[in-house]
Amino acid sequence: MTEPSVERLIKDAHRVLNNPFWIPELEANRVFERIHDDHDGTFTGRLMVQFTKDGDAWIKTDKHHGPSLRYRSPLGGGSSPRVKNALMLLALAIKLDNEQRPQEVIN
Picture: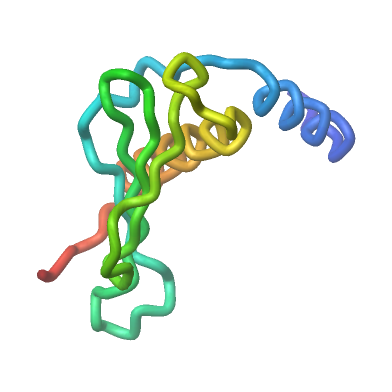
């Protein structure tokens, strides 16, 4: 199989961002989190993404002391459907990286 061109990947990115969808392997109410690469043994600096059963996306970091940030589904009054789709891809990327290269999380 040949590698897709950069132009093809960009076209695919636009297609994914512009169309509502759900990735079935992402479980609702599960937090997908990943520690950043430069934590220097502190195990801080986590990015967390979660989807509720109504399809809303929630993000936060362990450095963020305020409420989680919410991106609603279009049916729930969301005004950022592309951001929500990108967060779904981010959650899938975290899930796949955690499966391939699990991280030890120390609280």
